[in-house]
Each structure stands twice: as C-alpha cells, then as structure tokens.
Image 1 (cartoon, rainbow, N blue to C red):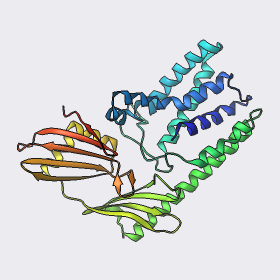
Image 2 (image 1 turned 120 degrees about the horizontal axis):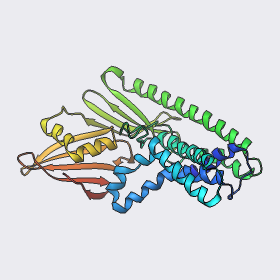
Image 3 (image 1 turned 45 degrees about the horizontal axis):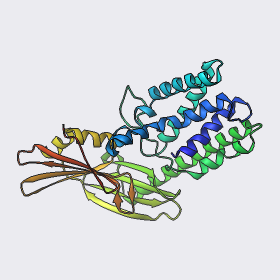
Image 4 (image 1 turned 135 degrees about the vertical axis):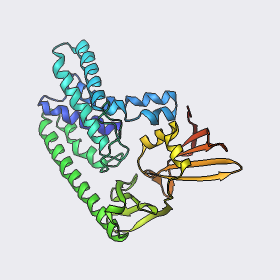
Length: 314
C-alpha cells in the first residue's frame, strides 16, 4: 500500500482517541509515524535492488518489528513532548498494526509471524493503491475538531468494502473453476488483484500438466492475457537449483512460479518466473541459474522489470 494511504489510515486510527486533530498532539504523531514506519525498509535499497527485494516486507512488517518500531517511536516522542510514554507506545503500535494489515491484504506478502516463521502471507484482496480506502478516511481531515465519528464511518466503509472484495474473489474462483473444469484435489488456484483496474483479477491455476495464468474482468467475465505453460516433472537439475541460495531466495519471494530448464553449448540453464505481477503478458520478476557440465552452479541473475542483477551463489 502507498505511504499516503498508510498515513491517512494511521490518522484515522489515532482519531479514535477522541481528541481534536492537531500536529502537536503526541498521540496523533505516534499513530501516524507508526503507520508509515515499517516502510523504512526501503533504506535497504542503498545496498541494491536485490537487497531491497530480499528484505522488503520482512522483519519491519512483522509483529516483532511492530513492537520495536513502536517502542522507538514512544521514546522519541517522550523525549520531545514529555509525559507518560506508555500511551505513545500503544498508539504507535496501533499505527504499525494498521500498516501490517493493509500490506497483508495485497498479493506481495509479509513475514507477519517473524521471527517464528519466515513464510510470506498474503490476503490477495487489495491493489497496491486503492483510491476507495483513501476516500473512506479523507473526512477525518475535514472534521478535525471531532474526527472520531468520521473514523468510525471510515472503518465501517472499509469493513464492508473488504467484504465485497472477498465475495468478488470467491465469485472469480468459481467462474474459473467452471471455465476450466477444475478439480481442487488435483491442483491449486490463486486469485489476486490485478495491478490495474479495480474489477480485474489475475489468476494462477496449477494443474497436473500445465499452469494457466491470466486476467479476468469481474464485470464482463472476459479473460485476457491468458497463457498456458507446460508443467514438467521435477528433474535432478531442477531439484538442485531449488536447493541453491538463489533458488531458495526466489521461492521465499513467491510461491507462484514457473520453472524451466534447457541445455546450450554444454551449459545447463534453469529459469524461475514469478507469476504474480505482470504488465500485459510480461512478468516483472525472474531468476536464471547457469550450471556447468558437472551441474555446478556458476552464475545466477535476478531480473526485475528488465534490470539484470547478479545473485550471490554462495
């Protein structure tokens, strides 16, 4: 979710305190700063794009990270405003939790249960920017003397909107099951918000022999950008590729991928393609692993929207 929406919802959360909206109110400061603080992991971009991809929505977006951020925010605000730091901590924690919930609800995924689990969880309900969420909480700014009521309506609007999105996703799943005669026992299906269009849903269908990806428009029921990819049986090389450091990193990044292998001039190539995010028919994220004749890993690269990034093979 974008930082402006995070801040707006953090402002709405702090309005539940019942106090007038003011930039000099430490409770508001704690909640708003808490609502944007988890995205400080963008600083990992200083070490390169691959470091950012490795750490984005990791520790900073976990329950442990929320507690650490909230404690730090409470200490800083206490040093500036004085008073009891405990309420600052609680409102900062409410802000960080709102951030975590929103990011969980799109399809990138967050390591919410770190350090107990590194698995990324994704609710697959919201786009990365959803204008309706912003609009739900905009009245908080317009009722700054008594914003509590506006926040209650914003939260109710958000609840019913998420319920509607959930029902839309279930309907899309049923449409796809009917369209492709799916048997849930023999495969899996995932439906995710498309990057563009509030009624567009990307889908991933994994069957015994093929993987199908595409986009379904909820209103006209039309499927576009549909691709059928052969799902080949696992080979010793594919198994080995998935056990390497680059392979493990890519599988931690996404559980929806297509893997292929081929040989050329004595070299063995394995590619992994993330099937979640695409522009038209091109996917944003890929990885390529290159092995020698003895099947020893020589090189590995990560492709991020046509940017080529070498990967550590150690």
